[in-house]
Image (cartoon, rainbow, N blue to C red):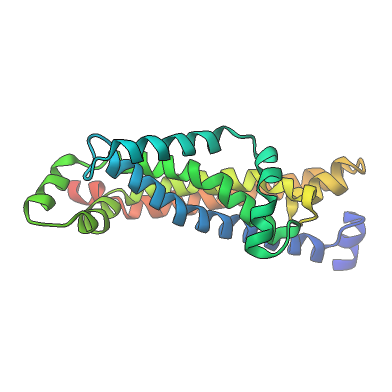
Length: 230
């Protein structure tokens, strides 16, 4: 049975597709996790230093906001080229999946930072003021009030970030990486193999739908507003 499937698949076997799925998931999940670590820091600082934030600081907010906007405006393929020395310094190589994680993280972190900032601004000011009136420090307000209250929105944002980053994974072919997108381009488009192109595209669509559904369900379960209304 497996031999027949492999024969139908042509150049690529089931094992190849399995490895491509794992590569795609690994690149996407690791890049998103790292981007969210940086993005939460960026988002918290942008929110906190805003004129209506918990520790207003216009110079910091202006400079950081400018850097974020510049990085978000640079096309990914150009950012990939510009950040090669950074990848070389961090992971020791400019090529392959590991280096691509660095490029994706740098590209996604500013985007995630803006989403985090937006999520934090959705938190009811009354909750923040109540925590402040009870003597909570800025760190306690961020850790115990802002982030928990914004969790559903943050999870929705994470689903968006994951699917966006997943959409960039075909670019791995530019630096000798792997994954479904690389197969779609290398074996599908460049070699005029429509079977491979459609199958890899279908698998990418399935991955996107599964990821979105998981995070949407998790967001609904952690929505404090729904619990309060019950």
